[in-house]
Length: 314
Image 1: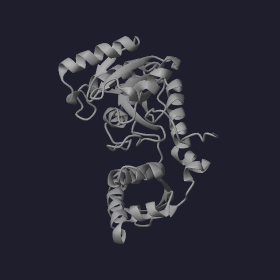
Image 2: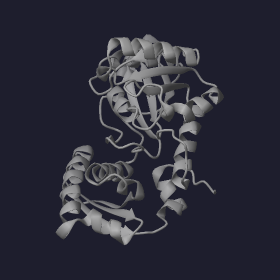
Image 3: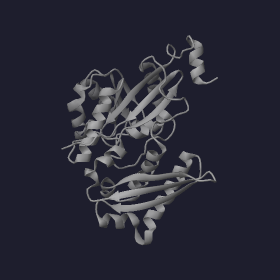
Image 4: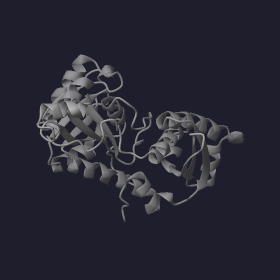
């Protein structure tokens, strides 16, 4: 019996009275662990994760099932003081999703504590008219006395509905949060099939995988100057898939860095990306990467639509 059928058996058979479903927006400063937590709650990788800040650009939705509850997790871009057009788009997306969600979860890096990176968050937090829980993440890297002190400081900021302490990386405390969210989302029918883990298309997810590999491979600044687009996805007669992706950079010097000496860098990125895309698609993948210089790609509205962001006019 499926989880949906179990829920229907409890109620009247419509699935409306027994099931629960709602959106939970994860907000926080860059590198607070929102994407890692999203993946931990879903139980599968639906959001890319790197050690660099601001990896997540557009909102990513992961879908977690807990009993008769479907929790739709919105992993928003890290909130920081915006400077560029892309920054402003990411900043706006995070707050828009927080305002639309049924519940908001503020993720705080317990190791960093309440530093200046949280100032943009605390400034706008009173505007969110939704139930808010606080999550102290990375507790495996903090001593108990420090954690107790931080908990008291967080409690003094505002009356959060709950404060959770967990490590998204190790999984410690994640089950308690998952159980709470299952009860906190409102009653209602599920919005997605029970075997669906994300509403992100395969094409977009594949582009994100390649962007993750670029972030992990390249030096500090370059990843923020590039974007990836899946330009072709073709199923072949033997069941495999041919995928073409374009990596857009802003300058010719950046293109040379992405390619590497004798194409070594792009080859390594392609191999790592192809393997993970194949695992995601459940079939062998033939991946072809192209690098193009587009000086003002960050001013192109089409690139923003590809990332799931609204284009700021200013």
